[in-house]
Image 1 (cartoon, rainbow, N blue to C red):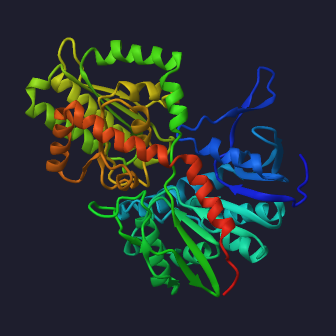
Image 2: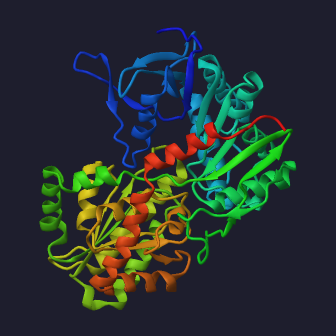
Image 3: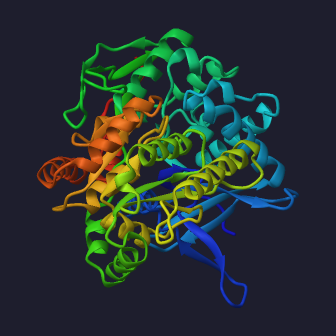
Length: 500
């Protein structure tokens, strides 16, 4: 344990740690690479290479809070920075994360208001956890330091930081969708949340639609003034589908301050994916998939989590209808559904997983032949190298959530298929749908649209596949996860945010 000297010029607040905690064979604490599939964690860590005395603030679970101070550890890779972890008791973790964040905020953010449950929420615990993150940031921060806060479970931290340290530059990034105002307004704490976000100098979102939803909520709920709209960046598709926006609000003013709004989608790591595709280990796993699962059949891959927002049940029903219509496909197509199980103890996710498992089992029981099972189903967390191997073998990647903030699997598939064919079937309710010109967009709420999309994917000729994939690969390579991080930080540091 070391004491903070308030010397950090760059601070990240994220509930996730930059490394996973482990134990060696002697029981000594060691730190293991998160190996985040989308590269966010490694990218954020790498920002410390060019920052003096940086700090990452996360949380850790402890048995009791009696005399528990923040744990501060000097991390040495990729450059020296402090990891400051705030102790939370099991009750706090359950209330702050599993109840308030997942049962209250998550369904609202994804526009599923019927799943909203406020009864078990303890707002005082949520406030207290956010306050402790803010205090830790203020104690670490040097004068006029930059603080970058990540995601909705730290919504209240900006207001606590601004009140205690008005000299700091504060940025916030949402990794989820931001809903329309009529849905967001369901939250009883809507005004406090908006007022806190308006304490930032910069608020970031994946795509212009989410930025516009926030700007409208801020305008309608607390009277923030909107700057004149501008055309969206050329990296976005501006018209044509559910989430497109031709123009976007660049800034807001409120309480004598100017708040910049920035639409910048998290990218992936195409160079890393390219290296893995050509590696011996991935080549070996690809061969095993080809011989063990594919067996000369057309392989359809869908990868997501067990979550009611991900549309897994709708996808399975569409696959069942495909097999009912197309008896010529029996024995010639296989669906790999990689659906990572959620943490235990949350009823809605347990019920969702049970429904998916029963549906997959029923379809397999209905159509299987002696040498063919139409659905391969896995709830384990597939290692990233193995997932890249699945990308390399999949003729079709079928990604059709009912709502998704971005969906990096779609981008990763495009990166893995460089200079190859392959078809991406993508829900128009994912953020990636306004970035990947070349995907077959579909509406997962419509049986007809889902049926048309998978039929088009199966019948698409190789020339069209190559043309579409080249467009998507170019989009992925022209804006990586590194570009995303740099755009957010540069926009904060280059702009003038003095009080109006």
